[in-house]
Image 1 (cartoon, rainbow, N blue to C red):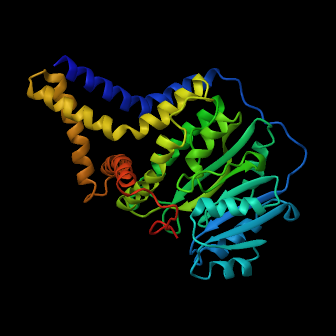
Image 2 (image 1 turned 30 degrees about the vertical axis):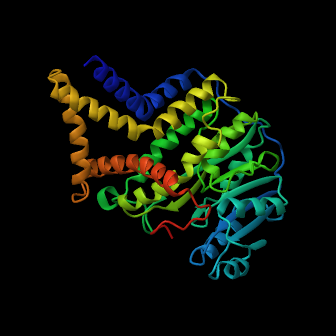
Image 3 (image 1 turned 180 degrees about the horizontal axis):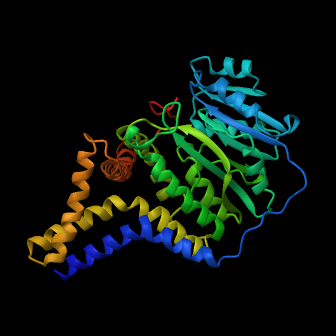
Length: 383
């Protein structure tokens, strides 16, 4: 029984730590951290903004218009649309809308399209965005401003998710990604203040040209860039003033499918991409990676251990405390099941948590079973 108790409490403690305790610890540490100041370079560098696109004819003209409307000197801004094996009118519409360079590439996946664009880019800074992500006018200046610090090699902005043509209100949106993302951005802000972020996002980010990495095409920039930048002596920072909007997947079930696909790209980074190697991290950043990434990705296994150990303890008559903890775990699962029929916010949040946690394990299964393709398709409902 002692072994079961140890297993249960260790698994439960690690879940609580990665989901809540880590953020609270960062908040406490940040209160005592010296404020980070970014020096002003006094000039704006040439910026190449790259949009990798696969069959994005429905949104590419709006994306080009959005980029050309940025508050950044036009003579210093280069817009490159890298068409990854497009079979529609994406290239034609990008040219007609005013893109500076349109690359028509064979299908090789998003990463290889970005690599090709960077090789031909003229900018000192290379920035990246999704075709369906719209930047606020001052976003480019904010990203470039963060990179004025010679120690910063990577900067990502803040993405806000909305449903349909308007931001979701209350229970009108079944997907709770917006709630999660606000929490995630708060954690990244704290990480950035203390050291470096542990992950970015594909909607709005930039690197120095000299810091850009060509990674395995199945390993996205969002996760592989920040920790690799740190290993190479750079800082990777979060810039909340650089804001973008992106349409979210309408349903929680759709979000599960999206995250499952994302995790099939994430697990190769964890196991083969260098994340597990502590070399180059330093103690503080190594603990950040462990707390925010590795333990977070391990939560399906931790939940399974906690539930099974708890169940066996109750069967063995371990006491009232374990009956209560088992009831709490079963209540979470019951609330997630009810969230499929009832649109009450607590039930939807429970369903979102359970399904997105399950997506971590599903993505691992997909990768182990049949590998991960470098190419991608837009998530349903996000265009």
